[in-house]
Length: 121
Image (cartoon, helix red, strand yellow):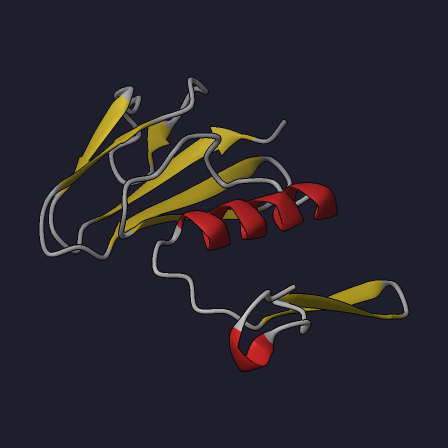
């Protein structure tokens, strides 16, 4: 709840339930991403959403996974104007294009993409 100004007594965060789902409304401007990172991270954890890589990703780097019956295809993408390093999560990965084992730490050039494969667990 807000404690001052014309917002006093009003909620800064609400949740509405419909069926088995929930909708959250954040009525606040957060200057730092820490709150939203923690909040969305907790929601994803509660919903059972698995990370594509069980690793911390640097700013502007994303990882998505697509799967077939036997293999996960992990797309690691750098949307930054500079190089980024990504430490993998210890699983056995292979480079999709070369078939070679992936190193423990990837170096992604600006706007770079790596496609990795791993066996499905």
